[in-house]
Amino acid sequence: MIEGKLIVFSAPSGSGKTTIVKHLLNQEDLNLEFSISATSRAPRGDEQHGKEYYFMSAEEFKKHIKNDDFLEWEEVYRDNFYGTLKKEVYRIWESGKHVVFDIDVVGGLDIKKLYPERTLAVFVKPPSIEELKIRLKKRKTESEDRINMRIAKASIELATAPQFDYIIENNNLKEALDESYRLVKNYLNN
Ligand code: 5GP
Image (tube, rainbow, N blue to C red; front, side):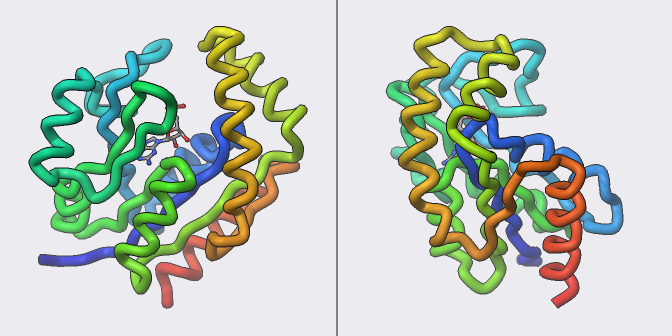
């Protein structure tokens, strides 16, 4: 099987990692494709099955766990499962592209452990927990309870940053985008 590289972006939600990943996907010279995760959470806003996620029931997700279909999976929030299907990564590699992930810190570090020689693991750091709260509220896609759940998790996630290959501080989006591009380009060229 052809094996490309794996570019992992992990961060507390609201840090801007999705914006960074989207930007990188638009840079054709990087030859990246997004790893669409499976999740048991409900679609938000205009999210579509097979685009942002493969949406499925918790039962279906558990069946995939049993069948050993996942490279990694996590119960990121209570009853909300998220995971990377092995066949998603193999499909992208077979198409001759490198894989880019937008996943939580535990999943990101798991992938680095599985493929240490072909993974670049990047942590995106938000300016502060306060700023994170403001960004999540602005998004207006979730209830106060869910936002608080994400904030509580963010503090724990921030502590894992030193385990990543690289930390990008997202204080200024334009700079974070440029830095991410340079970092990935350099990694793929070596
Ligand atoms: P959201 O519900 O905001 O889309 O995602 C919640 C968290 O789950 C985010 O940190 C996101 O990066 C993470 N996530 C998405 N897909 C996966 C996955 O396949 N595996 C893991 N471990 N986390 C994921």
